[in-house]
Image (cartoon, rainbow, N blue to C red; front, side, top):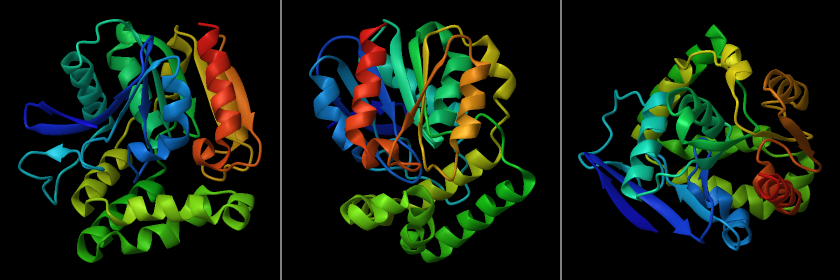
Length: 269
C-alpha cells in the first residue's frame, strides 16, 4: 500500500494493475481488505484502486480524528477526488461502493459526475436514515467512544452475513470481525454521525447517466434485493445482479459470482 498525504489527511491506498481505473470503496466499519478476493482477479485487467477511507484502516487525519468529529459522505467523496488527483488520474473512473461505500459513491456521482465512467452500487441504499435509525447511530457512536469497538463483531456480523456463510465459511466473519476490532473508535464515531445525517439520494437516481450495475446478495437483510431492485429500476438502463448464497457482504461471501458480474459489466463498457 502507498500513503498519500492530502492536506491534513494521510490516505492509505492499494493500487495495482493497469488499464481503466476501478475504485473500490469499502463498507462500514471495515477497510480495503474486504476486497481481498477482488484485488488479484480484477487487477489482471484493470487499474484497481482500493483506499482505506478516512478514519479506517491506516488512513486518518495527521493530527488524529477528534472524538466529536463528523465525516460526511461528501467528505469521503471529496477525499476520493483528491486521491485521484494525487494519483494523477484524470480519465473517468469506474467507482464501486458497498454499503456505506455505496452512499459515498452516490455522493461522488452528485459532486463529480464528469469523473465517472461507470458506477457500481453494491448492497447499499439510496434513502436517508429513518429518525430512529439515525438516533441509533448516534447512540452507537457514543458507546464505541466509551467502550471501544469490541461489541461490533457480535452485533453486526449476524446481520451482515448469510446463514450459509456463518455456518460453512466462518473464516469470512472472523476476518471481518478482526478488521472491526482494530478500527479507530474515533473514525467509527465520525462515520456513524455522517451516515446519520446523509441526505436522501433517491431523487438523484433518475439523473444518473453513466452505465450502472447494481449488485445485491440474495439474503441481504440490510439492503434487501427488493430495495436494490427499486434502485436499479430508478436508474436509466441500470442492470441488477443478485448474488446467490450471500448476504450484505457479497464480495466476501461469494467472490466468484461477484467477480464474474463485475468482469462482465466492465468488459461491456
